[in-house]
Length: 416
Ligand SMILES: Cc1cc2nc3c(=O)[nH]c(=O)nc-3n(C[C@H](O)[C@H](O)[C@H](O)COP(=O)(O)OP(=O)(O)OC[C@H]3O[C@@H](n4cnc5c(N)ncnc54)[C@H](O)[C@@H]3O)c2cc1C
Image 1: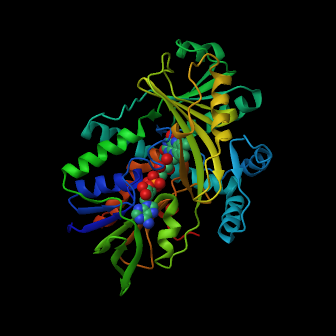
Image 2 (image 1 turned 30 degrees about the vertical axis):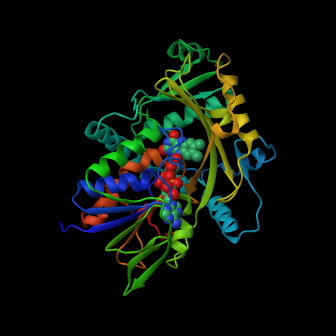
Image 3 (image 1 turned 60 degrees about the vertical axis):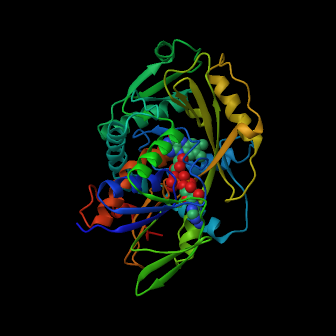
């Protein structure tokens, strides 16, 4: 394998994990980010590494449910009406993909990617040390009503088809697993294969490791354009000058279409805003992370800290924070854990981030046919932490000219 100089644009979890595998394989790596890698989407999320999430976001029933939810300003889902051709195209493609047929086609490759990533995330922990509070004990799907229970049990059966183990529990059994807090649910499904970690600490650990290995970081540096010649991208232009590139990786999250547009590539992707709140040193904490399915809220114990997050707001790249949505997350958490002793935080302490949503729920991972030295990795939606390690590995294999560990055709970057 010949050693290359790879320039990575974007230092979220995807860019960092790609840099990690590229560096391990012996490539020279430079990473450019317009921020400082301390506050973006990959930082404040729920931290799940969850192979249990086997059904792609675009799935039957989601459109009808989304339309119902849109009638309430505190619901878990919202699309801000805008006159945008991209938004209309994205919505129509998402709708067209929300069928049984597409889900049957897309679930197996997603599961393959999830399982590969789950294994590789544990490997990263073993290689760099568990400085990011990773726990491998599973995650609950908890529900309050019979209809959701039926649906979650069907999903557990579907997961079993892919060899994913589940434990279905009634309310007493769930409570026994959480002896320190009161749990008010009808029941829950535990997916023991799932893990969770502190995503900010994970990012920091990989960043430090990469710096120690001599990766060049150009932070607080915005990519503003490119130079091209003979089917290659030759230079990346930034607000601090231009740099030459040999191999280029774009991993700019929800800003992927903004960056690719400068290369004449139109990517179908929308940003899905979510919120989280973190309560430090919670007196009585949860023992297990849990998704509160009826309200689409994610609860994650991170050592002594507790994070709760949720909502999906498709409102563009620059919309303001809506505090009532954060309040709805906080209120929902108390419906399931009535004696949680945490105060609703001040506005400054409410975090928001933008999930990069492809219109079928599968990420974009692959080379782009317009340029011989361009790889794209993005659109990981609500699975960026879960899929980062596998994405990094696959990108390294592509850059090195090796066969990939799994078939990457379903993630083709030119599919829309
Ligand atoms: C509330 C919430 C909870 C979530 N929970 C989970 C979870 O439990 N598990 C999970 O797997 N996923 C979860 N996610 C999803 C996950 O956070 C994302 O999928 C992931 O962070 C996307 O990573 P990324 O690297 O693609 O993008 P980002 O983290 O957004 O990184 C993109 C980077 O590109 C940089 N960039 C953009 N444009 C430019 C430019 N022109 N020049 C230079 N740099 C640029 C940005 O500064 C940014 O640092 C959650 C998301 C939210 C919002």
